[in-house]
Image (cartoon, rainbow, N blue to C red):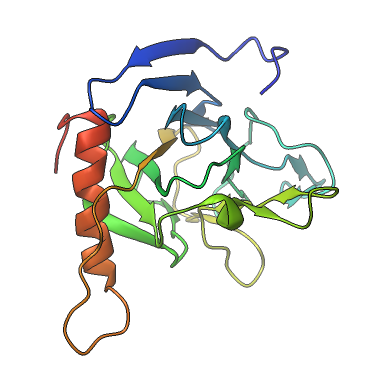
Length: 238
């Protein structure tokens, strides 16, 4: 992350977990609705697992009819605003990237706090993210990526042309929209949607049931949830 974004605050957090040394929390883009919307996020990771962790999205351009189109050729951003209109859905593509991932396995988590989102505004999470059944540090629902990540999972290509893998969070519909806005949404609705990303060491091996070749989503969620508590404490456990 560059230092150009004055909206971000850098907070150093010391972890007491035996296998962790320092966690860095980086405040990212903010999300808020009131006929306009901004995304809010926060990132926390362990220094020995990666060099950096980002949550960002591609900018959306408002068309003359009030709809939005993603500009995937533009540089990703952490903050953008939308004018919400009843019945006009929004293409929004928040994604996480892991820079400088080491080969120490790590769980990638995303927390989504939609406690202030009206029922007329909805979204769906991609199937590769598993609901852990607990809340994150900020009271939102905590999801984990469906495998513990090592270096090869976070980058593609060769040493001369490495591309980082983008772990997208929201599932698009057949028109590419990820935020569905009901036609019954009040025009002066206040709402908020927050995203947070975490990376912590994968210590617990997910159990594989007898006769199965791979652990179930429930087993992955249980292992990841235990390690999240080891990394970041039992705050807001669900």
